[in-house]
Length: 229
Image 1 (spheres, rainbow, N blue to C red):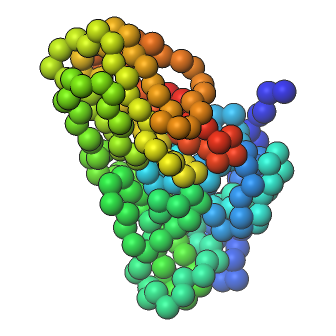
Image 2: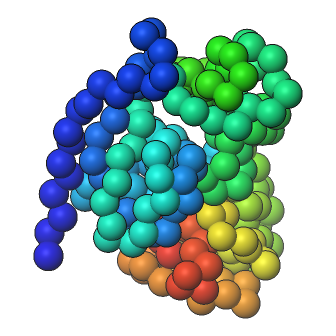
């Protein structure tokens, strides 16, 4: 059944005449805890956001726990209640490398600012994708097959010429939310993507041209790497 996103914007006053936030009703694509940062997909479902996944940046916060196919409110802007601990006003929060979690410690590599403390227990939600730096790149130049892709970066395949047959292994021992991208600057006539001990699913790819870009993401729930791009 096709899912349709229903965006019901609402102004929510949060205990103060100036504290307000904007939210919408969303459907859960997985089990999400209250207060987690989420990303809304084109199908209208929301999933936990994660810093190191370029396809899954934060676009909101769950107001309450959200189950698979359940509905609930997602805050997208304004002031929300959040356990800011001893962090003083002005403390910036970022999307972390743990799915759904935010942190005052800026992650290495790709990052996203999600809010700032305005006073104890109150977070001003403001997503700042424009501060995301240049994507971290791992350059692979070796012509010896197989080569193992690095986790949570864009692997630039730059081998200096056409490869007749080549195998790339996905990172070993992945954890939920890990991804690996490969961008090709050379042709691979017969391409093999090896799961390195883990199941690989999604659309298969058997050749690569200059400019080909593929991304695999690991899902604990499926115990497999799934091609998402």
